[in-house]
Amino acid sequence: MQSQKKYIPNELLIAIGILIFELAYFTFLSNWLN
Image (cartoon, rainbow, N blue to C red; front, side):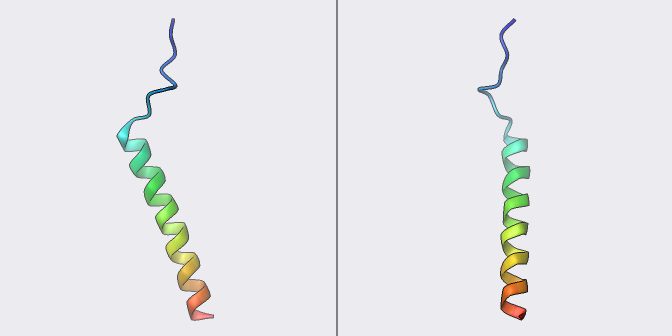
């Protein structure tokens, strides 16, 4: 039984990218508004 930990689905990469983008975006907005 070989685990496929080396393979990361594109959906997971996209979801992580969106989460990081939203976090950076709202951090920028909060800093800019303050």
